[in-house]
Length: 239
Image 1 (cartoon, helix red, strand yellow):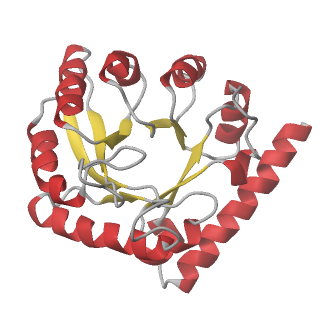
Image 2: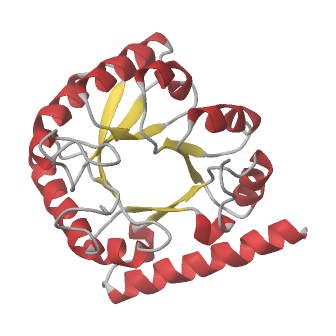
């Protein structure tokens, strides 16, 4: 076993243990929570090692990093998630590899994703990114749609050719009423998910929680957690 494989195996095992412990504490089965490893800034070689260790879901947040990495890993049995803010001029590239886009937050993006998915004859899963810190603009500091905009946007995605409405995603906000209250934020997301499933019962995915707060997300009921640094190590600064 290479040094890097040994390192990643040990970190992955620790994260698996954290998720299992959190599930047990919440009275949930371990199979109820899916780990997505966020591989941003790390090379395709790490993705290959993770795949060999049993990881099946990976995420990226920058198309310029993700596109070549995904292209180098097409032989691996992976589901690719795009989790970063997505500009419409990057949609053609992202739809080429992303199975799920977790950061859908506006009508114009829905239209662009649908057009491209139809063009390449792919079905792309979509999560609505919810901004729990949304201000008067209706958008959050890191993108996202305000809670009162979910229903309208969900209907757009559900009706869009080539797209599949999978559920909701959020990032614990740094400002506003939920700042420093991660579990309350994730609990609010679960309430919004319950509301969404009344009209879109198949939209069951709830993506919340990262390396620092995955336990709170599991406790609240998240179905997917997005973990990067706890598996891959502290990221190098992008200069």
